Length: 145
Length: 145
Image 1 (tube, chains in turn green, blue):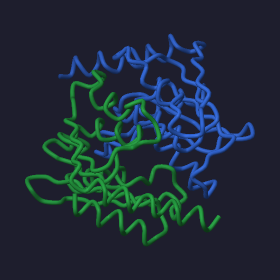
Image 2 (cartoon, chains in turn yellow, brown; image 1 turned 180 degrees about the vertical axis):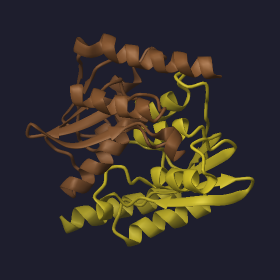
Image 3 (spheres, helix red, strand yellow; image 1 turned 120 degrees about the vertical axis):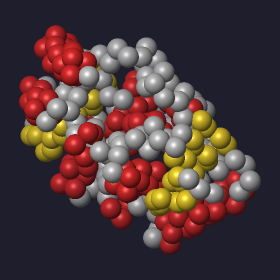
C-alpha cells in the first residue's frame, strides 16, 4: 500500500486526483499506475487501468492469474470491472469511496457473470493518510476555482 | 447499429468474441472498436473501451459530451463504467447479456456516484442477427476444443 501511496503522490504532483495502484505477483511489484485523466484527457486513464494495461503487456496475457492489486481508493465501476475481467486474485484498497453508498465495487467483483471472484479487502492501516491527501487536493482545487 | 455489427464481424474474422461498438457525435461516427482481447492479450481491449479511447484522442477531451455509443451486446461492468466516466450521453445496445441477471450495466449507468446519468436504450431491431453471430462463434469454439 505504501507503494500505491507513492503513485498517488506522483499524481498529486501532476495536479491530478491523487490515486495510485500497484500490481504484485509472487511478492514482486510488476506494474504501477497513477491517475492521469486530466493530463492525458482520456477518461480511461485511472491508476488501476494503467497498472492492468502494463501488467498484461509484461505478462503477455490478459489473464492476471495469481496477481494482487493494491489501490489507494476503492475502485470505480470501470476499474472494478477491469480487475474482474483481468481475473485478478485479490484487491486491497486503502480508503473507502464515500461519494455513493451503492457498494458497486463489491457487487461487480462478487458478480456471478464471470467464473471468477476477486477477493476484496479494505485495509484501513493508511486510511487517514490517504483520505488527507485526497481532501487536501480537493480543498486546493476549490480555492483555485 | 449496422456499423457496430460490421465491427462485430471484424472481430469474428480475427477469431475474437464478435462484439463491436461505434461512437457518434452530431450524426457522424467519430470512432469504432472491435473486441480484440485475445489477439492483444489485454483484458482491457473490449470494443467499447477501444472506441472510447479513440474518441477521447480525437476530441482531445476525456469528456465525450453529446456523444452516443452503439454496442452490439449489453456492456460488461468495465465498459459500462467507462461509458459513465466518459460522460457519454446515450448508450444503445442491440442484444441482452444473458450470462447474469444482476442488471449491473443499468445500475452502473444510473448510479448517483457521478453527476451524470447515461440514457440506456435496448434496441431490439437486430437482436436475432447479433445473437446468431455470437452463438455461432461459441458453437464453433466448443467444436474446436
